[in-house]
Structure formats: C-alpha cells, structure tokens
Length: 360
Image 1: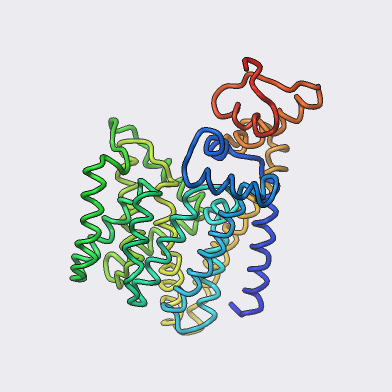
Image 2: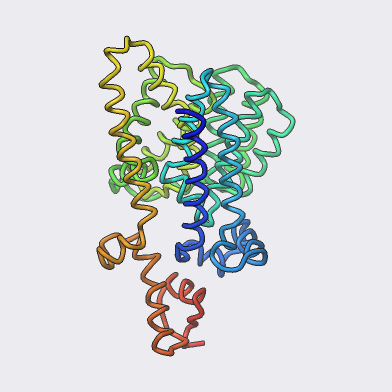
C-alpha cells in the first residue's frame, strides 16, 4: 500500500468516525453508564459533554483514545516490518476493523484498554520499562477482565525467562484472586461456542477472523511467539473455553485479541513473497475477497440507520436496541408527550432524549 492511498484512507477513517459518533443514537450501555454508573467511562462522558454538546461530546474522549491507539499501532508496526508499504497496510487494516470503528464511535472502556495494551507492548519492545508498572496498575483498576492480560504476561515472562515481568504479573493475578475480581466463571455447559465465533466474525469481519484464527494457530505450531501473540492467543483461547460453559461478553476479550492484526499481515506477506510471481495470483485473489468482505462489514456499520429503516424492527436486534428508542422518542415528542414508562435500559435512553418516566 502506498503512502498516498494510506493518507486518503486515514482521512476517510477520521470523517467516518466523527460522522458516526455524532449521528449514532445513544446505546443502552452508554445510557446506563451515563445515568447509573460512576466509572471512568461515566466521568469521561460527562467531561466531553461539557466541552462539546450532544452525542459527539459524549464520545469525544473515546475518539481521542482511538486516534492515539492508531498512532501507537503505527509505531508498533514499524518494529515488525522493514517495508513501509507493509506498515501502511497493517495500520489501515487495523483502523477499519469493524470492532475498532465501533469502539471509536461509542463510549466504552474497551478503547482505553486497547490503547494501554498497545502502549505497554510498544514500551516493552523498546525496553522502556519505567512506565510499565503504572500501565499494569491502570489496567488492573479500570478493567476487571484484565486478568487475561496478566496471565498472558506471566506465560510470556516464564517462557522467555523475564523474571521481573513474571513476578509483577503474578502479583497482579494474586491481587485479582484476593479481591475476588476478574471474569466471573459460573453456570453449566450451555454451548455459546458458535455464538462467540459469530461475535468475533463481527469484530473482524467473517473471512478476516478465519485468517486471524489460522494465524494464531500457525504461530503456535512453528512461528515466532511475540508478546502480542501471547496476549491475543491467551484472550482468544480463554474466551472460547469459557463459551463452552457460559455466555461470554466479547467486549472483555476483543481489546486483547485485536492487537495482533500485525501478525496477520506478517504471515500473509511472508507467504506471498516466498513464492515466485506466477504463483502469487491465488494469494492476491484471496486477499481481495477478504478485503471485499471487510468493506461490506464496514459499509453495514456506516449505513446501519438506513438498513434499520429498510429491514424494520427486530431484524437486527443490536440495531433495534439503538434506533427503536430514538425513533420512539421522536414519535412521543411529535405527539406532545413528555413522559413514558419504559422498562430496562430503554427508559434511560428515552431519558437522554428528554422523555422522563410518568411515575416520577
């Protein structure tokens, strides 16, 4: 990928991010964070609202975290690729993952976690160790599922004989156990395995996730196991194992899994370049097909509102949770009504649009 194309894609990414952040109605999770939580996400949403009014303000800081993550990812890519075009391709692929776009335009803790994990990996590989304990401490407090991260660091530290990293990550794991924090493990085998595969397919796009899964497996068998691979592989395996027994929240695992986009590009480019030009055609065709599915996935995000209107309610449950309260609030206002007794998080979404509970 050339520099000019990359810059055009970067410009498109920024425009799409701002557009979606400003026009996508508030989600149930965002409404709960805004009105019923006292977390870091809540605080950042409130600060953003004071700076910029409306939905864009709610999501302002999370967009900034996303742009910073992209910059860190670009710096990290330069450590893995000698050719600049590979750096551009890896970064462009990363920023147009549906999971990254979603995390950019919605208020969520995942994008903060992603930025911290990328920064940790970058500083570790640069041998700048002074800030690493503080990043680990931040992850410990802001994300209960970060125990996955510390387990991956422990495995890496033991395997590569990095005693300080192993001891420090082990201490954080013990703190999780002592405080009874972390991922809840409960229930009986219920078979959410296929569901988790579907969720990962939505985060990456279907064919890209299949190649990601292949990349993780190939590196396990005979590839160089970097710190990024340990983090992504551990998160992926834990999520799949837990899905056999219980419902898994993909937002707990996706920030750790998505950082290995670099590994996908590295494996693909190595496979492509070891072959003579006449034998590269099928690899290039496969690449274009995968990219086609990725573009389709991104288009479905960008045009989610018209798709919701065309397909009607209930066809896409996630879209319905976002758009149904929005259009219902508009309908109530058009009828001159200022209150409505809704159930669950829909009541909080209506509250954001100025529709209070009649019982109050």
